[in-house]
Figure 1 (cartoon, rainbow, N blue to C red):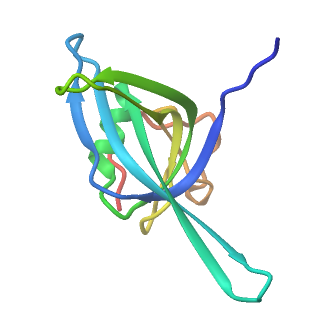
Figure 2 (cartoon, rainbow, N blue to C red):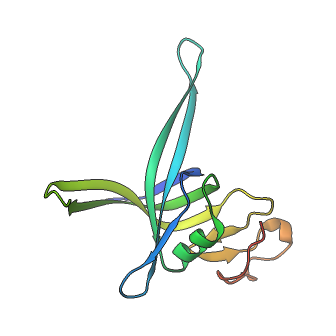
Length: 142
């Protein structure tokens, strides 16, 4: 049976990213994303709803998100939907869905550069070809 788990979102960070490290020293960052939907109702009135989504990224991606993003910044996220379950301190079972980030792209800032899979890509306006890819740790001027 075929299956697909792919999520594409564009939104703004609802809080500053929270960076931590696993016992294996792998970086993990958690952040919230607000995704807006606008439409016109049957009555002609403009409407809007906001969906708040928790996201998590690992490794070099986590470090770049933590280094360059703050609350309010726009971000494109590509990832997969994951379902986490745990037992709370009071013994109740808890669960929630979140997005595990696989790729992302900075969208806001005076000269936001494309970052895919934690590896910085040159922007077309810089006149670089696709073979000249900067390292993920390079400074990204905002």
